[in-house]
Amino acid sequence: MNKRRNPRLEILHDDDSFCAVSKPAGYSTVSERWDHDRICLIDLLWSHWKQTDSAAPRPHVVHRLDKETSGVILFARNAVAQSKLRNQFMEREVKKSYGALVKDLPDPPRGTSIFQVAENPARPGSMRFQSNGKECITEYQVMEAYRDHCWVEARPRTGRTHQVRMAMAKLGTPCICDPLYGDGQPLFLSSFKRGYRKGRDAEERPLLGRLGLHALSITVRHPVTDDPMTISSSPPKDLAAALRQLRRWSRA
Image 1 (cartoon, rainbow, N blue to C red):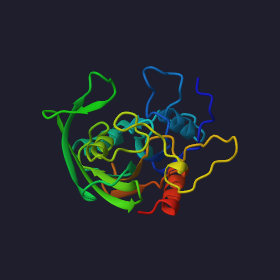
Image 2: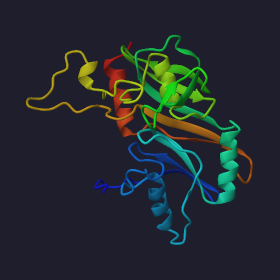
Image 3: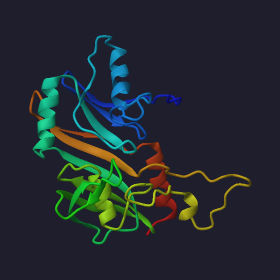
């Protein structure tokens, strides 16, 4: 069972058609096949809805984020809204922006990454680069550069599994703490602060011990009014703290 306290959800938008949530890292969008006892994001949102409406229907999944990725995610309140929003994703009409904290600096610092991928049978749940696979197109640009890391905005134009993570890895700048496409190592202050000294008998805790990826914004058309909407989410505390320390101690 998951013993940790469930987080208070940050609701970014909510109406009769759909809801946008700032997903916390560490929670799967839906229940994982191998761990039905661990609460997932859709259950958290349903519990939140039932606090004001005991008859609230279970949220409808529109799209997903990786378990360790934080940021904007949408859920529909009914099947009609779900279908209309999903169609926008399928037709590549949705504009998405991610913030990725990565190692080193991509060369060039701004461009478009295009490659093909397929499922990796040797490692279920992951993808691999494959010349005859499905195309991935990701635009990217460096927003902040540090000595050995940078903060990148990535804008996927296709919607493949792990697309942004693989785009960063393809550029030779994998996301921090990515166990699939990077080295999986956390970010420590001692790795970039010159003259760092840890406290006596104290074990250094990582600044960021999870995947350095955050869904910054999504632009969709409202499923009822058809008006364009951009919904944004600021980086959560752990990622924001890591960025502050990098700005302070590791400027390029």
